[in-house]
Image (cartoon, rainbow, N blue to C red):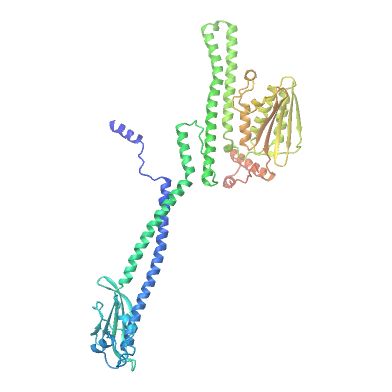
Amino acid sequence: MKATELEQETEEQPKKRGFRLSLKWEWTLSTALGVLVIFAVIIILIFNSFMTVLMRQERTHVADSLNVVVERLSSQKKALSSGQVDELLRPRTVLADEPSGKGKGTMPYNNAVLSTLSRDSQTVTVYDTQGQILYATDKTVAPFKTSSHQRIGVKTINKVKHLVGRMPIRSKQGNRLLGYVQVTDNLKDYRATQVKLYQVALVLGLIAGLAAAILSYILASFLLRPVEAIRETIHAVREDPQTDRRVPEIRHTDELSDLGTLFNDMLDTTQGYMDQQQQFVEDVSHELRTPVAIIQGHMEMLDRWGKDDPEVLDESIKASLQETKRMKSLVQEMLDLQRAEQIEVNYTNEVTNVSEVVQQVYDNFKMIHPDFTFILDDDVHRPVQVQIYRNHLEQILIILLDNAVKYTQARKEIHLTFESDMRNVEVAVQDFGEGISQQNMDRVFNRFYRVDKARSRTKGGNGLGLAIAKRLIEAYHGRINIESAVGHGSVFRISLPILPDATAKILNAKKEQAQAIANGNVPTGIKSALLEDDTDHSEDPKS
């Protein structure tokens, strides 16, 4: 038992949220990382290009050194010896051209030989035809290999990359092989330049990343202000659902401003629903409290002494039955209002001939209210079809005509007008009764609202009729409005969009197919085909 309770307590404990970054920091870090990646790619491309150029220059230097040495030694006719090579390549002192010493001084070889042999990064080695060293400017680290032509390549010597060039030495006369020359470049300058470029790239990368992070943080702080405002508004609404706080107006017309507007609209809608729910509960409680109290009072009176008095018993039973009927009517109207909220789900393909319904309701009211004069002004004179459930249209007209009858006292005359244009059909119900003040006109469509509550209760009204009518009309993309003057009567107008003939035919065909399937009058094969062809060809009634 203790283990089970412990498990339940563990499950009920809220899960601890791990470390998280705010959207602002995520934006900042991701932007900085993206800039660093792009910067790194660019730097790598530039670095590789630059190092390729440097390597090409080093190869050129090695090739020049090979050519200079070969050019200097190829003038010999016999095989090279150590003394000859040393005499031709080793620097000498300046000699005078004239005994007087007044002539110009010259070197035993030109400046190209001097610059070639004086490079610190290069080692020049001359070999005879047998591979023996005849001359070397420094310690030779690269092994000797013969070569029939000039070859330059990168070799790894003692785990360090060197650039090694080899070339045969041939005499200018007879093309006789005199020996070989090898130039080894330790690439010291190349690597030094490479290290400097690495350092510069690293420093520039850090500067770029830091600058990108700072700029991204500032930009994120500026652009995410609406999100912060929405978050603060959500916290305020969570703490106080009845608060009037909303997201401040965002001047920038972007997705975040749209989000703020939608969020405010959602809060207003939710607040409206909450107010309606609260009002609905209060009104229902108030409306049910009266008949329940009346019934309870009569029952208590009968229980105490009234059951022995036939007159009191008869009066109490009649009053209780009347209040029970009123409660039943109230509950039925509440159910009608609830069903009106689900019209979009259940009645999307219903099509109704408005002319037939108007004529039918007109004839019915003439019959049940012979003391009233009903006048029908039909300016359409043709079938007009709209997308609405027939029973709902009848219910709307009955509510409007019933209200007109209830609130008409002296002039018992009611006008029913039916007209249309190219897009909409309009039905108006006019009475010459008490009328409605401007203050009450703004609230007549509210649930349980009655202009004269005492008179409405005596006439059996619950204040839900106009609320049901408005909800039904709006559910079918229509409009309902009122014009009234106190003492001169009221005019209620409803307007619904007309369906094109082609769309009406399609919806009627679908309705007939559904009825045939429900009645089982369609063969299985046709039934399957009808069920598969479920494409909605209806047009938007608003268009």
